[in-house]
Structures are given as C-alpha cells and as structure tokens.
Length: 415
Ligand SMILES: [Zn+2]
Image (cartoon, rainbow, N blue to C red; front, top):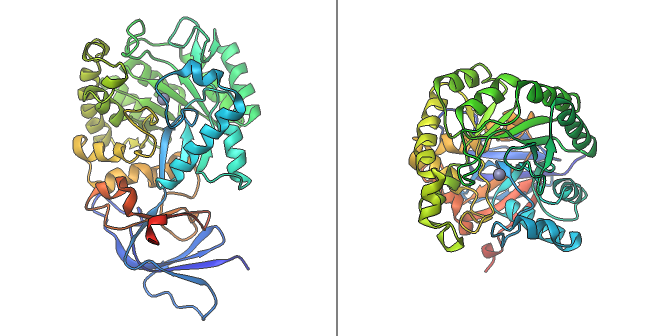
C-alpha cells in the first residue's frame, strides 16, 4: 500500500470556493501522491499513517507561476547573451538553483515562457522527475519564436519563422523534443523602442498552423502580446495563454470572452510595477528609459484591463517574468500582492490565480486541496486569505509537499 500521511490540526484553504473563501479546520489524508480525504477529525487505526501535527498552520495548494524563465540565474542582470554563452554544465547548476528556489518559495508548478539555452526546461524537468534535484512540476518551454523582421527576429536569441510553413516546422521540432508550452512573440515591447507594444507580428494563418501543430502533440501556445490587436489575434486563433495583454480595446475583450473556457491571461503586473517604481534604476533602467518605454501608460492600462477581464469572467493566471534583480527569484508571490493592491482582487481571488486556475490551464489535478487531487501543498503560518503578505515571508513558510512527499521543510523550524 502507498505511504499515507495524515496532516492534523490544520486550517485548510482549499481554493475550491469563491472570492470570500476562508480556511477551515480540517485534517488532510494523503495516500501516495494524492489527497484522499479532507475533513475534520479523520480517524485512523494507530500506525495506519504517518501523522504530522501542523499546530494550526494553514494548508493551501502549492502555488503556480505561468510565466517562468528557468534559464535566468539567481544573479541575472538582463545579460541574455552572456547566459546563452555560459558553458552548459555551469549553466545547468544555475538552473538547478532556480528550480529549487521556486519549490522552496512554495511554487510546485511552473509553465515555461521561453529558454535561453534551448534544452533548459527539458533537462531540468527530467532531473526533477528522476529525483536528482528538488523543483516544481514543469510544463517545459523551448527557445522563443519570433517572426522575421519582428522583435527577436534577428535570430540571436530566438528561433525565427518567415511563414506558416516554417513556423509549423519549428513548433513540430520543439514538440518532438518534449516542449509543451510554445512561446511566440506576436507583439513588440515598449522597452525596445524600435518595436513598440502596438506592433503585431505573425498573422492568423501562422498562429492557426502553430496551434494545430501544437495540439497534435498535446502542447499549447503561449504568446507575448502587449497591444490590443495582437491579443485579439491570439484569442481568435486558439492560443491558450496570452502574456501581458497590457492594452485591451473592446474587440480584444470580446475575442477573449469568446474563448473564456480555454484561454487564460497572464499579466505580469509586478514587473511593470517594479519598472515604473524605479526598482530597475540601479541596473540601467533610468527614468528617461522608463519614460520612453511607455510603461507608465502600460501599467495604468493593465490595471484597467484586469478589471475588464474579471468582469468578463476571463481567467487570470499569476506569473511574471521573475528573475531580474528588481523582481528577484524567490519573490514570486509579489505578483499576488499587486493583484490585491492594484487590481481590486481579494487575497483569495489573487491566490486562485496561482492555484485553481493553474489546474484549469494545465488540465492537471492540481491547485485545490480536494480529494483526488495531487498532494502538492504549501504549509504556512498565518492566514494568507486575510493577509496576502503571509505568502511573501520566507519565515512563515513551514513546508512544501509535492507528489505527497515533504519536498521542503523550513530549517528555521528547528532552531
Ligand atoms: Zn518573459
């Protein structure tokens, strides 16, 4: 029989309810990698399970981040070229440190948003699955894909497609290697003034071909899309995750709404917040550069856009390009804090973007503390449904379980 663990004396934030959900007193019985019971006062024969008394701590689903660059080391300073050129062995140790940081920060699930060395996500995913290094469940990405003439189209850091046929070939090759989250650049980015956010790259025929090819492999498309027109194109062609979506006109919202059962938006609000708040200034992002990027307008527009997305019932995912020195690895839950501070979410609604919604987008039984779901859990001191800051404090993080095993226990618990 599979090993059983009974978590007793817990407050369970199940992430199965609405915006007013609160933790309730319950025990959680885990058998193998699954949650098999969530109820108060679970009684078992002595010796039938390993009993762990959580002494009133809160148990919630392990968190997820849907926009992750595992390739960016802990000391990353936007030096993409240097990362690409680092000897692969040395680089993979950096990647191992990053996945460990995700796990120890309470993140048991990530979706790749593009690699710097092509095999980063695939290699580290394999190492984690084999138990060589601790890390989250990964939907692996590969190199980002750009269009000839578009942002990234110089081919220095990305694969480049000229038409639907060549894009389809790139998607097929990445999928054959194991990539399951393709990352395409279909808009510009204000931070690169020659490629403004309103620019649209690729077209309906290219995206439709890429979606069909990915689908054939059980993979899906994610896109960098900042302007309205690119967002609308992503929605009508079958893209699953729209990253950023900074500008949303009526047509874009309508197109997203038509796909709300199988499309999610991943804003990256904390990244913009950090940029416009001057946190990147020590790393060369001067006030003049930020001014020129239009990020102030994007930040305001994204907040308004998130309000419209919520009203339209479009699923929002937590995720945010973490790994810069101004959005450091390990501070991933800052994205949730910004949702509460600026986007009008309750703490629980924000938590749902990192838990229950990750189950929706991935199709995996994750993101809820519920019978039959995978036992990927986070144990914290305090109530994150009352204070989202609880998730940002490493000292309050007691333990992380993945696949029903204790994958991290805070060493500070045993002084
Ligand atoms: Zn990114």
